[in-house]
Length: 498
Ligand code: XMP
Image: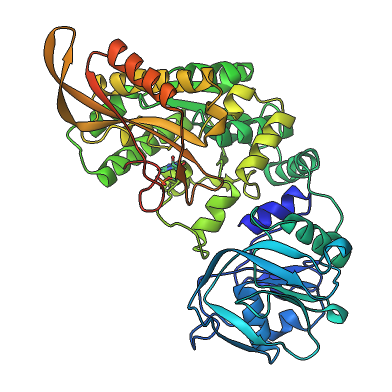
């Protein structure tokens, strides 16, 4: 997924395809192929097999890590396990021969590169030249320049590989001859034309969640098919402070095509007595479908349901390697609705990564405050209040979250972390507040840095900022007498606590 993002940052359109994707057999469907790394071992009998036609030279190939090993085997070279079992982390690649993939000046230099592999190429396939070697990895890079087939044992897509992005750039432009065609203004034009062709003059319903994806999907649809979009903003009582109001203001221009539904009581009632995280999620999902179904019926003839599905959701649900089946996104909450309403689905952001959604949003004039917001799970504060969700606990969590976020923003840390929030724990602790012994709630602060939300590191927020948050929260919210900071990365933890 990271390789595709990097290529798109170069304004080259790239898609992640599975080994059985029909597009791989469509003549002219792509200008170049990148075979990515993967968790398998090319030396195992059950290793994923590479179709030899893909590396027959009819299209340029950049094969990375496992991809290079698979290509080597198919073309008659040899792969064997590394002597020291696994090579992981930073290493040096000594360039031995010039190549269209490397900068002419780097020739005979040693490049810092990042690798993670348990197998290595021990004999080049016929027609290949060694491009780079390392101390413990004899073949760091190889090529058959005539056929435009390239192999890298290291990962050019990670920032730890010096000049890695330049290798991808040379592959895309010099070797494959791609043009820069992937920009958000040009995407907007193409997507709008496609939406008009798909929807015609029919009406589209979209559930606004307050998050970035649904906001940008709404803006794109409204600009493509003005007057045909109906937005439903369901206040489930589980949102962050000011979230409903801000979204309402952002889409006020829709007039009576913005339907705001106060369904907080319905959601909180559905959550009464529930403690198990999955049961809580299910109760919220079912209530959401019920509310949306009711509103859809009331808003007259609606033929389409728009969803803010984005590309990582598509890749993850396709069960690709590295995909996390557990990251269930909010749009899954409307599962079941299309059948009930006999309605068609439109997903205008289906091809976009999150950073592209934000750029498209800016192109469409969506408020920066909305675009810069950290992601927020569909089930909202309900999965950040461990144990039973009640009105009182929602108020506590919402007030504490607002203080944490306000402090992060005032110190310039909000945009430095990918996600920050509070978690109200289902335990009480002893404290002294004023002159009194108290027995009150414990609150956890969580902030993470991540590019893709599949793995994440806990954010190293300065001590004095944490101290301020703790002091303010315990002073301003009497039901909290203890604040802790979560210092766990993902894995082993997840970002959310439930
Ligand atoms: P985890 O907790 O799985 O979260 O590490 C990864 C990312 O997904 C978000 N998340 C959700 N988003 N509906 C959503 O829309 C959900 O049910 C859901 N659960 C987790 C989480 O906030 C993080 O950004």
